[in-house]
Length: 93
Picture 1 (cartoon, rainbow, N blue to C red):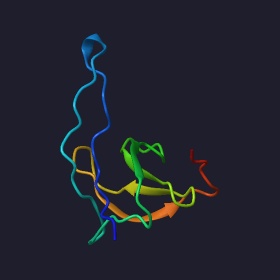
Picture 2 (cartoon, rainbow, N blue to C red):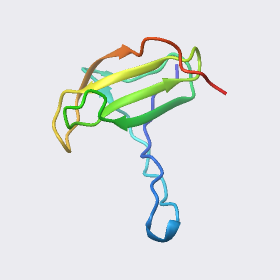
Picture 3 (tube, rainbow, N blue to C red):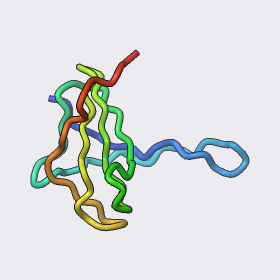
C-alpha cells in the first residue's frame, strides 16, 4: 500500500529562482494516516470552503478522483477528518 507523503509546493523565490522542496511528511485525517488508493498523488493546499483555512486537496491519477480534506484545525495547526470526493472526474495526462 502506498503511503501518502506530502511535500511543500515549489515556491518561487525572489529573482525567479525556485526554492527547494521541503522534506516530505505524513498527514493524518482523524486517527489514520492519509493513504491514497493508487500512487501518484497530487496534493495542493487551497481554501476550498472560503473559511480562511487552507484545506488539503489530493488528486489521484488512478480514476481522476479529487479528495477534499476540509481543515477543521486553525491557522498554523491544520487538522483533518474525513474527505469528500469532488463530484465528477479530473482529467489526467
